[in-house]
Length: 317
Image 1 (cartoon, rainbow, N blue to C red):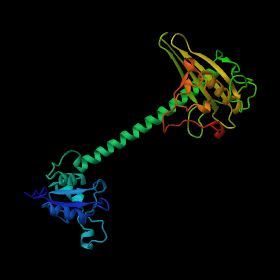
Image 2 (tube, helix red, strand yellow; image 1 turned 90 degrees about the vertical axis):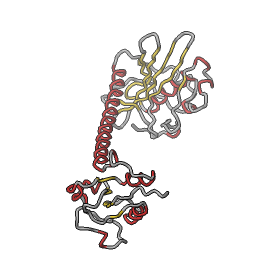
Image 3 (cartoon, helix red, strand yellow; image 1 turned 120 degrees about the vertical axis):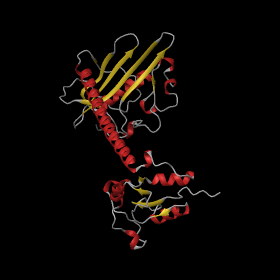
Image 4 (cartoon, rainbow, N blue to C red; image 1 turned 180 degrees about the vertical axis):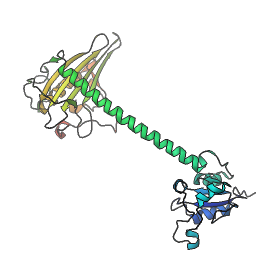
């Protein structure tokens, strides 16, 4: 038995539903499935299919396909406005028509199928999205402020160890980076975490866990740069462990040049992991030279910023 899901319905349409959903196409769908096609609003119409835009604008009923007859292109009756005035039928979304045809029976005119409800829900989604965006931006700003404050606290704490990192000249294989003496310098500028051209943040954690001793250790290694140009740099190291307070060190003081600060960063990385910075992407880097006593660096996942290799650096903020 042939089913006609639109039998007994008189359907009018207003709005542009795209090149594959012309009014001419919708007319064939309606008539093929037992419905009647209306070219104007009257008391005989049972359903008006409308776009959100036409509903909001109370648009005149018209077919936006130029190849159709002029008589069908624009009518004098304001379809949505008249439909709301008559209150004789419901104004539906295109999804109601499509889903009714796909399922083979007429769906109830309720919920998201009502244009008014769809518009209301769309406004809510937009409002929530806008609020979420604002909160995300605020969270990012707050996080950046906290990052900067943490750096300032360490640089000016007076308790952090300010000394040349002992591995920089004698233990670090990366001797192609020219190092200069670490002489503390005053700097009125504020600092933030350095990010290279890949947006990788030079704020990394090196971890070592000893299950037998129930001990967990972590170094946080940071390469910092000033907010404004010309940029100067600083390198910080913080040691966290299970039993005790954090120990902070300044490996390259405020006002350091790029070679000094980045050299200190690479030297500290090698000293703790026994792996050179440029070889950090090895499958099991901590086993290469460090053995069980070495700290482990978790390489960022594929698709995330991973940092440049030494020869590719473009020094910036």
